[in-house]
Length: 69
Image (cartoon, rainbow, N blue to C red; front, side, top):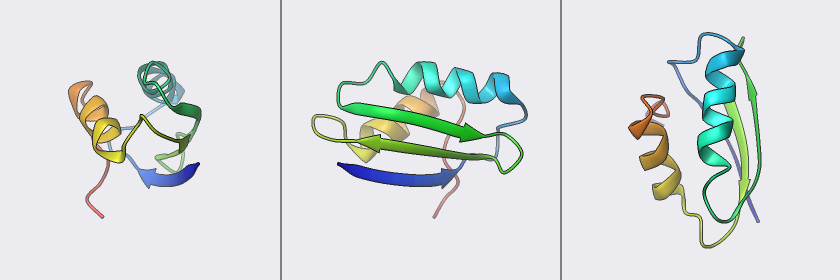
């Protein structure tokens, strides 16, 4: 299981966090998604077949791309 915490600058409220959770939970291999709107961060636990690249693609598609690291 891979755990990752990352910043998403487009998060402005808990509605944004909920949209991200809804999108990422649809990916096979995603175990959990949590977010903090005040810190603009998302925490995700995932395993194969989910990949970081697929997660970034899904977030970019819904206009919540992760900050460049």
